[in-house]
Image (tube, rainbow, N blue to C red; front, side, top):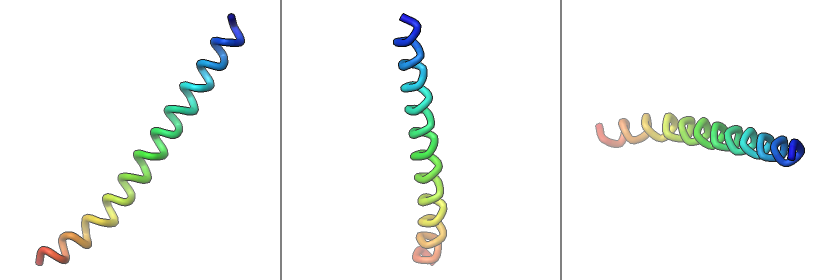
Length: 42
């Protein structure tokens, strides 16, 4: 029972870490794309 709970906890931690990494990468990409769009609009 305890071992299953620990596995679940590890899975949740991995999932949140992956989600945080994906969001930070997406935000970085968005910041890089935005200035280029601004330059094209002008």
